[in-house]
Length: 259
Image (cartoon, rainbow, N blue to C red; front, side):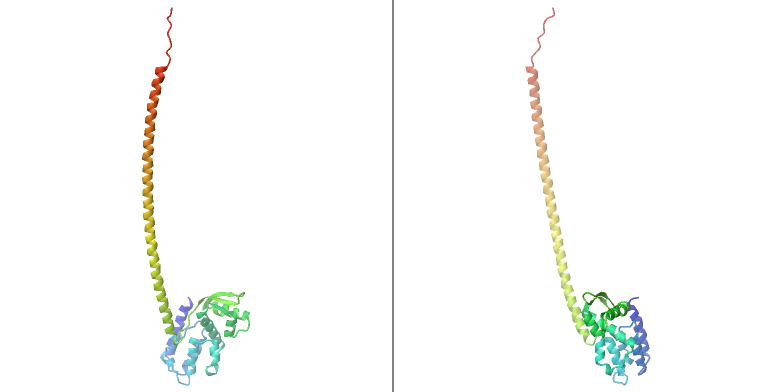
């Protein structure tokens, strides 16, 4: 089961559970969800009416924390940590994992220095252990650690929840991609038509050449046959003359009487 399938089960569980609770009881749900080792998407939980009702109440910090896990990073959390609940070790790990996903959204090559700064990691060994054990083995990213270039080359990264206001830009990106794809398709179709027409021309040209070759072969064959017959007639006529002359000019032996 891949990361998306596992997440779907966990999201369904937390959505149903949050729908049955109110007020302070939801704070525990937020902690449980943001600490879960295989949950990395929170927009469905954020959409639960009882969760949204925390806005402006004494428990609104739990709603803000859930939003941070849906869209934020570790460095963003540190900037507003005084206004949010203190994180448990599992929550810190989760937010750092989500930070890697955010960085991978826009960059397929992540320098070690950037990762260490964003994750508060002090040395390369600790960083590589985190990327391997807490990201790659979990299945949220795939890639290659390049120690020589001091970077992580991202081959795959699980998607995060869409940030507020990000939907419009994503629609624009997809629209541009669709336009580009349509133009590319038209260009490919035109090239296919050109290739087909050139293929037909090549076939026609080859057919004409084959027909010409056959005509030349027939002409040469006919000429060779005529020449052969002409030589054969001349030889027979010449041979007959020679035979006649030889018989006529052959000296005759005289016969002496026996006596």
